[in-house]
Image (cartoon, rainbow, N blue to C red; front, side, top):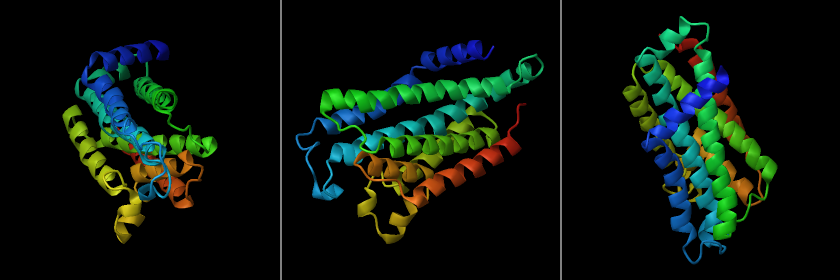
Length: 245
């Protein structure tokens, strides 16, 4: 039954033209636009002697991808299912509604995995992007960051009464996290207080840890702790307040 539900959710995801275009288009376009610049793979003083492509742009594309899926598309889909009574009908059937939640998570995680592989492998082949120099740290950061952001998205889905509200709240969280996490302005160029704040928000913690791992460094303990705390707190609150009806 989980396989069928996942297949149905995947079809619904692909039928919505906005979701695949947004998820695939924004990160790939970002990578291509900046990756085709002449100095994209040359060391830059602005990025601490690292190439802009691997030191900022590629991790940024990954972070934006995970953030969009977790904070806008996923909670919007779950809240819409509740609004339309899909979860209530499942609750009256032998299939528990939690199966639908699992199917939604699997579809979104599969979409994230495909686009991350396109960024890393496709970027390496087409643009000469360096692969992450610290693959263990990269995978650890990716898992923790994805868990933290999807936990936040699940909390939004738990509290929002409608799909439209969930999408609006998720977007309202997503863009400030981008701005304060070092997306619009790299962390190194933020003023003192904001520089510290960039590693306290889950999106910024993931982005800055990915930047370090991509160029051979390691994630900072504060970044890892931030992602773990957000995952536990938001996940726990979502379980507490999530309504199937």
